[in-house]
Amino acid sequence: MSATSVKAGGAAAVATPPGLKLLIGAGGIYAAFLYYGSLQEDVFRFVGASGDKFTQAWFLQVLEALANVLVGFLGMKASGATPNLPLREFAISGTTQVSAKAFTSLALANGLSFPVATLAKSGKMVPVMIGSLLLGGSSYTLREYLQVAMIVAGTAIVGLGKKSGGENSALGVAFIALSLVCDGVTGGVQKKLKAEAKKRGVNPKPYDFMFWTNLFMAATAIVVAFSLGEVTTGAAYMSANPEIMSKIIKFSACSAVGQSFIFYTISNFDPLVCTTVTTTRKVFSVLLSIFLKGHVLSAQGWGGIALAVAGIMSEMAEKMGKSKAAAKKKVW
Image (cartoon, rainbow, N blue to C red; front, side, top):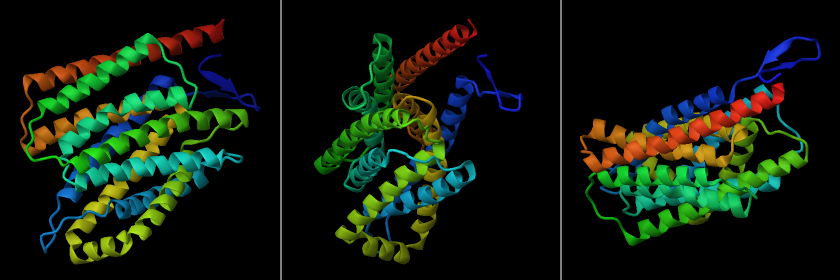
């Protein structure tokens, strides 16, 4: 039986089709992180009463990670915690993931424009694939390499087609480069984490991923934020500028909701699939910026969207084909 399994009592339980799982994961990620991206831009463009900007990136990661830990803990308790998980891999993944997010925020805080940062982060599929190959023992087909190339190139073209002003500092570029390196390590470690869990005979649930990853993310962010003095200065900035507080609260809430869907996707698919979803979401973030903030997209930008969508459709068609082939094999 391909779509059902029989319980001990004899009742048949219908399994969720892979296509529907991908739709749930991608839909949730898009909805939460489209707003998340807009709020992130607002936070780092915010100018306080004294004319200064919010630059406490690690303090922001503390607040974001703690919101995720809370939601992850509640979800894990409701769905049941999985024992004997590979916590070492979770610790490494959490550390590199929070570092990637903090470096992106630091890039924005140090002069890199949001469109350029979004463009640069669209290339994270490449380091994730490299990380999965080197650290996770993955292998990919020529078609998968071409699909990644189409999606990354299309997303890059969209970013280049979106006109934006402002200068981008060398320090901002350096931080976004560090963020991409951390993305690559995270993808490889997540692949290795799932392999280690399989060896132990355990299957982490989405909220297992969310709680343990964010617990280590929060721990890393707290240590760094305290060592840099950002907890004090960040709290003082929010106290002096209460208008930014609502933006940060919404930003953290969107992260918690979005990460619920991210870890749902990671627990059901290869990390590259999740990265594909989060990368193409950036295309829609650019579109949202165009329609809501009056930016203009050139013909080149629309061509990039077409290229990225072609890559996505090719990947979805391939996965649906594999799913049907696997189902037919089980039937036979």
